Amino acid sequence: MNKINVNDKEEVKVYFQHHRNKDENGRVLPTGGETIAYTFDDKNKKIEAYAVCSMKDDYNKKLGRWIDTGRLLKMLGYNPKCINKSKI
Image (tube, rainbow, N blue to C red; front, side, top):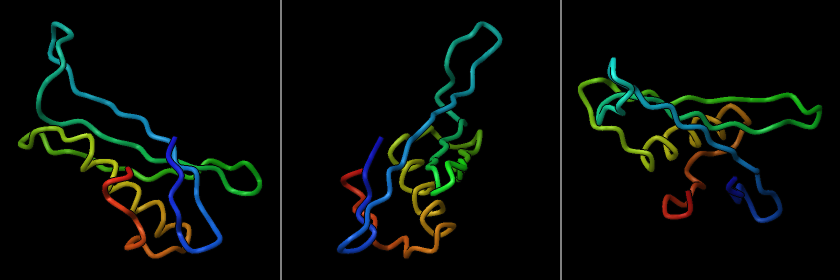
């Protein structure tokens, strides 16, 4: 869980899940996968945003977190430019 400061008075708690693609033997592949960022609103409803990595690209956990956190904040009405990339 990360706390993202969206302005001087508010922060959003963001949780992450990472899903990696596997081959037929269960080994993790270096390409593809997805990252899910989620939070809960005032009514405890789960709000999710996704970043999907192409099977042509190497999976990058940090980049996935940055992309889906920006999408999540945008869905919540915040400016995604407030994200400090080094703190995700």
